[in-house]
Structure formats: structure tokens, C-alpha cells
Image 1 (cartoon, chains in turn brown, green):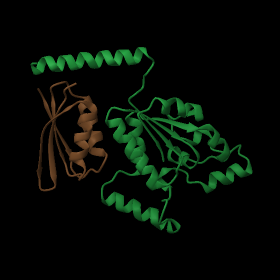
Image 2 (cartoon, helix red, strand yellow):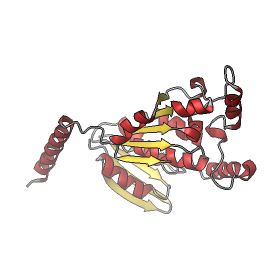
Image 3 (cartoon, rainbow over the protein chains, first blue to last red):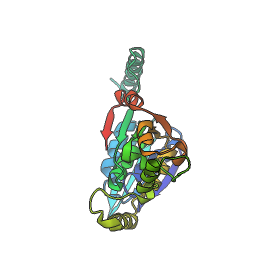
Image 4 (cartoon, rainbow over the protein chains, first blue to last red):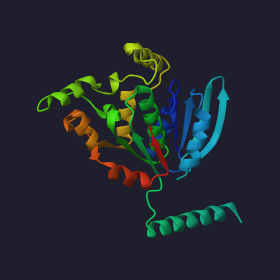
Length: 75
Length: 183
């Protein structure tokens, strides 16, 4: 199970979601992406994106302005 | 029920529902259809933000450009073979998305320049970047041929990869879409 690190710091809506979705397409089911982003709407957008695409949000944490999310490709 | 079995049952039910819907002719439920009428930078940025987010969320996206909206997919001006009126219209309209104005605070061109600078400083993608990204993500773009004729815009003035159609082309996409927007 591989993990890809994705740095979306400095990017604004909708680019972090676009990058996550592009990266996911290159991965196998079971692989994970660890994303760092400081877009203020990142958490709300990512949660909505996960609901729509049926992927899985494994972890989410916030340190200062940087949000870190771990997403697993489940389908 | 053990969770593995629940997942399996859910997946089987989903597959069966999808199969039934397809058999009943209910298809294309995962589409966003945008009718882009405006040629204002702020409105176009909103349209492409939604289009990119939709494409990233697994929706098929169809954008239909009509009237002022055609500017978003214009890449240059041509004058050869046009009537005087068409040449004038071509000259008065922006030559592409990089030079469009804003819907408010236009202030003889100062407003758009000011907003472009603010967006760049905030690292918000520019309109031309968003359009290129939309093409990369497979967003379908359709140009309204009737407005092209009215404004004297020829096919070679639009970006490659654009499709052409009329109101029925738009409706065929919009009728099967989950999300429809007029911008």
C-alpha cells in the first residue's frame, strides 16, 4: 500500500480538490494520499468531495493554518 | 449483519439499481451542465471554479457558451472575409479571456487589472489557467453557433477542442444533468 504526499499549500479553491482527484487517478485501490493545504475551505470541500466520490477520509488534522488529510482510494 | 456483508450487499444493490436505471433509459445522472452567457471576468471565474470542482468530483461537465460568454473560449481575432459590422463587433469585443472586464467596478479597465493582481497575489488561478485546466480534465465546451453568427466570430477564432451546437445541443446535456447553472 503506497502513499503519495501532495503539497497544496498556497493553492486556492478549487485547485486542492482538482489536484487530489488528479493524483487519485494515478493510484491503486488501497493506496493513500497525504495532502497538506491551507485553503480555508479545504476541510468542508474535501469532506463533500469524499461523499460524492465514495473515497475514504482516514485522518484530518489542523496545525496552525495548515490542514493535513489522509485519503484512501477505496474504489 | 457483519460489516463486510453489509458492504457487499450495498454494492450489489447499487449495481442492480444502476442496471435498472440504465434499462429504463435514465442515464447521465452524473452531469453538471453550465450555460455560460456572461463575458465578465468575475462571472467566468465563478463558472470555471464550479466546472473544475465538478470535474474533480467525478461529474461529467458540459459548458455551453453563448453571446458574451463566447469570449471565454476565444483565442484571437480574425477580420478576413467579414462584413463591416462583423469586423466592428469583433474589434469591440475582447479578443480572449485574458482581457475580459468585470461586471462591477470596471472603471475604464482599472478594475479588472486591480482584481487580476489581487487574485494573483492570493494565488487564485487566473481565468486562462482555469480554462486550460478544464480542458485537461475533459470538460466538454460547446460554442453556440447562432451567437457566433450574430457576432461574426469564426471557428478559427476559438480554442481547439471546442464543439459546436445550438439550443437543442444544450438541452440534451442539461435534461440529463444533476446540476444546471445559468451564469
